[in-house]
Length: 381
Image (cartoon, rainbow, N blue to C red; front, side, top):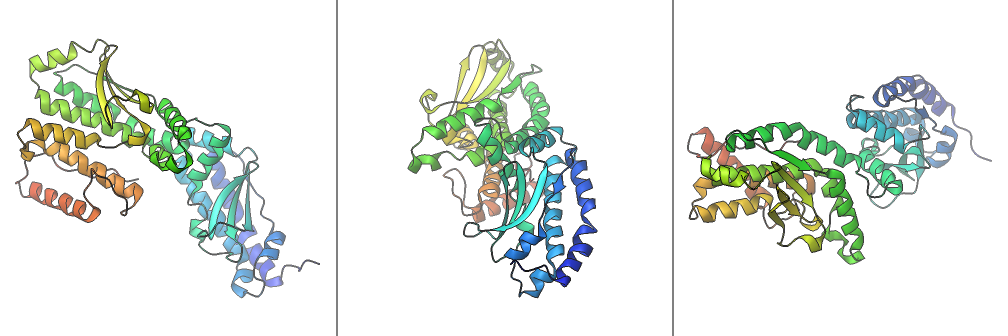
């Protein structure tokens, strides 16, 4: 016969969960536009907790409330507190049951608390034997969990992380970059054209072609997380190159524009066999200037190529290539932020050296000794 929940635990559930949960339910409705039900079974939890541990039993209500509270915070972050209609719709589509549970279950090594989606229900999960531990981690991976669940039924469709970063880092800056390009082209505006959904479809298809041991060649998570900033890095490199090469020379600008009937700059991610050069290439195609890369080289050497081209054409005088160097350092800072400081790229200085270089360049400009534009750190989320 199952043991009954102790009086102390029941009092904690009443005072610290039942009396307070409606506030969280209301906030989740505000953030999602839908009614979600908390379906935690304290009877089931009681069978999984250490009943000899006064902390686990006495604070059961508080622990469950905290789990729901951290989840509510994450939902607010994802939906921008209900202001992001696209994210709200995505969230609700992935969770058709509109129910949220708290359970104790066996988890993979290294996890004490996490979340998952099971049969359309969002579950907040503590590892068996660790009820109440690492509560702040219990919904930390919510966005990734939503994307994983979405991809199971919508393989190849653009994940939430990619949609959000595309809006935040590309669409939000697109008009400004187009204006800066127009300034370099003496008033002629070029349209920046990209299809993030096609980038994702190609990336997933190329990933699926790889053998198991080669899967690490394509980092789908990085492509999703950097969909917006990655795309924008290519267009900003294009801007840096025309600024350096054309210098607003009317004949140079005229010759370039004569080849662009569509007045477009296009960025594409293509299958491996369609990329002629390694890493990236730029071609004139169908009246547009088209920049291409493949999924394996996503965001690889976008700025580095521009730097080498600039330095060579200026007889290895780095002082004339400050903007390209700044762009590379900003890209590297973002790379280490996303991948961690143990990550490595042939294009980037090691993290400590990068920090030093960024600091030195800032100090040089503050002292008036730097010749290039002010360095701006990569935007942090």
